[in-house]
Figure 1 (cartoon, rainbow, N blue to C red):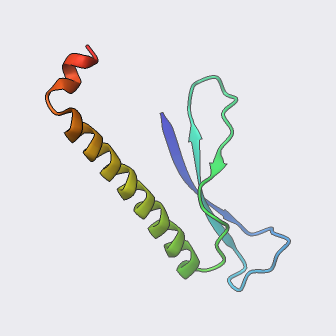
Figure 2: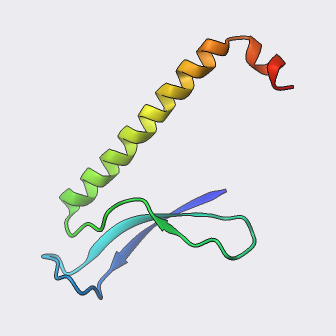
Length: 84
């Protein structure tokens, strides 16, 4: 299972106009306790930058959804029988 979190940093070495940096992180929760979260957006110093990063993620997910749709459509009704 994956979990996502919004992280705000206010103690950064690079000054930001708003005084904070925001980014989205994802971690795979395997239960082993050693799963480090990974950043999936760049550090964003403004709402505009953050929105651009979220829109980029949405576009990437939509591209992946399209690929899956085409693949499932190509297999059609054969898919369940091939992987039972």
